Length: 373
Ligand SMILES: [Zn+2]
Image (cartoon, protein in one colour):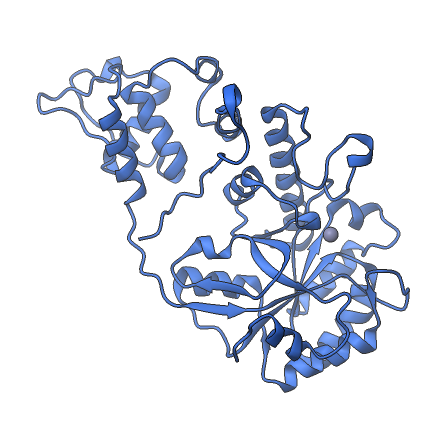
C-alpha cells in the first residue's frame, strides 16, 4: 500500500508554541480553508469542515464533479462547503446518518477523525514493483572557461561516448515518471544526464555532442538567468534544443537560486529564520509557479521536475513543489538514485552524482557508488 498523499510532514520545521504554523501556512496558501478558519486554530472541527479539509488535501479534483446529495438537514450545511460535503460523501470518506441527517455542525470525535483520515489514505491500493537503479549525472558548464564548474567539451564527450559504448541509454525524467506511474518499460541500463543552471555553453558545446551521439539530456533552468545573465542561453536556443527531442527543460527556480546568507537573506529555497511561515510559503509557491509557467509559455511543455539550488530543501519545499505538479525533485547528494514502480514517493529527492570535478571514467564512478550493471 502506498500513501497517495503528498502532504506536509512538518515535524522537522517547528516546535513549541509555533508547532502548527507551517501546516497552517501551507493549507492557507493552497486554499484549504478561509481566513476565519485559520484565525481560529483552537475551534473544534465540524463534520462539514472535516469534509472540506479531506477533499482539499487528498482529492481536490473531485470538487464540483459530484451529483447532489439529499440530507434532511442539507440547508444547515454552509453553502461554500456543500461541494466538499458532496465530494466527500461520493468518495465514501464520510456518510450521513441512518435517519437521513448529516449533522454538518456537530463536532468530530477523535475516533471519527481517525476513521475519516484512514479512509482518505487507503483509497488506492498500488502494487509496488522492485527498486531499480537509475544513475543521474549532474553537470553544469561545459566550456574552456576553466573556472570551478567547467569541464572541457572533449572530456564531456569522452564520458558520453564511454556510456554509450557501455550500453547505457539516456532517458528523460518523463520516461521515468511513466515507468513509476504506469509501468511503461524503460530501455536497458537507463541513465539521466542532468545539467544545471542553463549555461550558454550547453547550447554551444553539449547540444552538438548529444546530436552526434544521439543521446538525451535534461537541463534545469534558472528563470532569471535565461532572461538576464550574460552566461545564460536565449529562449530561441532553448526552443531549438527542445524541438530536437534530445533535450528537455526543468525548473531550477525563477529567482531563488542565490545564497544571500551573508546579508541575512535566503539560501536557495530555504526559509529565513525571521520570516513568517505564511510569507515563506507564499514566496516559494509563487516563485515555483512562476518558473513552471515561464518554461511552459516559452517551450510549450510544463516541467515536472524541481531541481533544488545547492541541493538545499526542507519538508515544506517538498510539500509545496510536489503540490504544484513537480513529480520529481533532485538534490545534489552523491549517490545512485533508485525508483520503484507504483511508488511515486521514490521520485522525490533523487540522488545525483556530481560530475563537474570527475574527469575520468564514468563507469568506474558508477561502480564506486554501488551501481550494479
Ligand atoms: Zn544551480
